[in-house]
Length: 132
Image 1 (cartoon, rainbow, N blue to C red):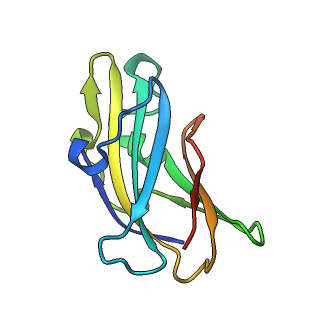
Image 2 (cartoon, rainbow, N blue to C red):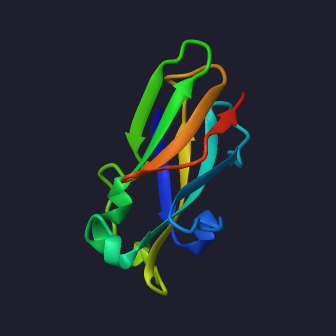
Image 3 (cartoon, helix red, strand yellow):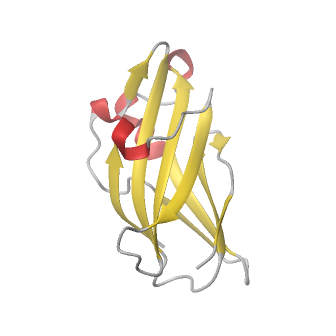
């Protein structure tokens, strides 16, 4: 599993952030290419309870894929070795909010259906079923 592209900001994710935690949605890649999907998500944490400095919060987002047929798991950090900027994390009232969009490629790892969820420090998102 590879995360090929990542962008941040309200236009990137465009999902309503939960009260606290993380939520994701998965859609087809614009190219329609098999094995690639677009993952959109949003994270929210109260500023007073943030587990890391603002600039480091996106590094706490991980995607986990579990292949349905063989139950093989794959986990990858959303950001990886990419640069992160402080304004990638928005301040909304008393909270930090991160909207994100990433292109997930399963071409080398998975050929069938899988479950996908995100984690953000101590929070786990909804689980999404992805079928080719």
